[in-house]
Image 1 (cartoon, rainbow, N blue to C red):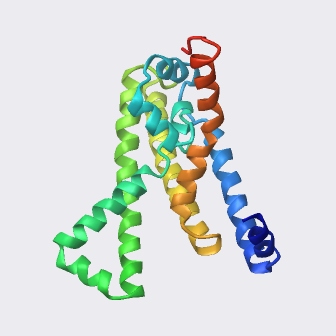
Image 2 (spheres, one colour; image 1 turned 180 degrees about the horizontal axis):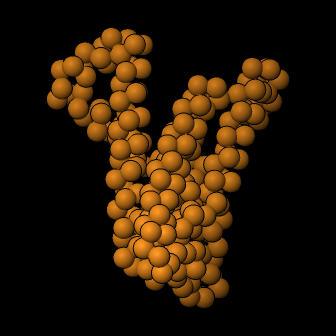
Length: 213
């Protein structure tokens, strides 16, 4: 396998695709560390330390730890995955969408465009719910000014929505200019990025005998 990879890397076009994909993955990891403006990082850290579970750990793995840190990529590509499933199901129920799917490249482009719009809409809904929930819990930056407090909520909503849209765009660019299957690669790199932390947790729990908070 290593020999096949070495031979493939000698081809200029493949090198460019691998290099482009690698750069996009770096952007993803940088974005995963950027805090969302208006969020109180210390409160969020304490909140997630007290609220752990299988569902939370699974979603946090999908986001590469971005959800736990409430970074700009906290929503990850889950809105895109959800919208893709919804559109695929709607193609069965709506004849117009089914026709688009059969129209070849033009039809697929139209369906992809619908999926993008639906992704942004779902990301916006999730961001609003998350921002309102955290604001009620006091996890956003507090201010004596109502106008400033409301602006903080709006800033969180637009930041999370934009972060999800950017990840969708990165996934599509990897598909187009990189090695392909961009959304799957984004999801994979997020899961892989959590492996060192998960291995450390397993070691502390089952080998060293320490209790992980």
